Length: 253
Ligand code: 13P
Image (cartoon, rainbow, N blue to C red; front, side):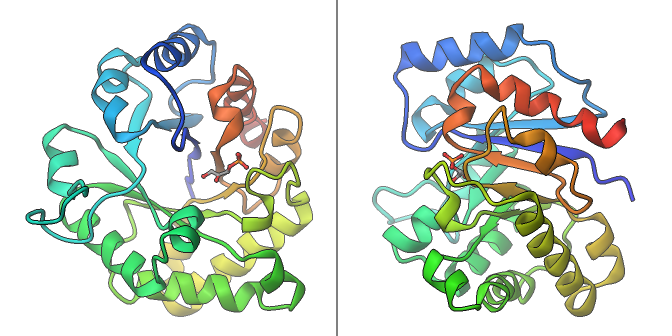
């Protein structure tokens, strides 16, 4: 099936020039599995993208954390997909729960963003995930299926999409999903893709997990058959990110 392990580091709204340089130099000096074992993408804030892109080891790539929903123009404060392409930024994270919940990005809006970014040639890490309330009420699958459906409605080619399942209750809380909880949702998402998109998309799309992943819990999560990698927040700013990259070898062991 050839789903290469994928690890994204989402730096969120963190860092000074000095701190960014430190993280880059840590990553550049790290011994990590080769590029055919793990695909590595780090996502600094917009303002640091050129610095990171120009100083990071070439086999690691960069992602923006967001982009505008359509062609640029009179949209103060926004950054367009065209600009990212112009700067040769290959990836963008879209639909992160922090944007869905704090900035009220609706499922349809995220779907439009994903479709537009893909149409411009960007690769997309599309985030989905339920809140604690939704999990406790038993609607996890309905929620993530609706989020995925809004993307699938506008996207026909999934080759450049990585789906990031990030339960909101696990983000930044230290309360990681158990390997069984992650596997269950990833497996259901793959079934959803099979039933609603195609067998091929279900078999080949990377579904990565995010939410309190760290150097200690990554291996067991990586061992789950439908967990194809991680989207890491807090730990991506620290040396333990390298341990998370190394967990990719669990798949090839
Ligand atoms: P934490 O790893 O800090 O929980 O964040 C996860 C996340 O939101 C990645 O996008």
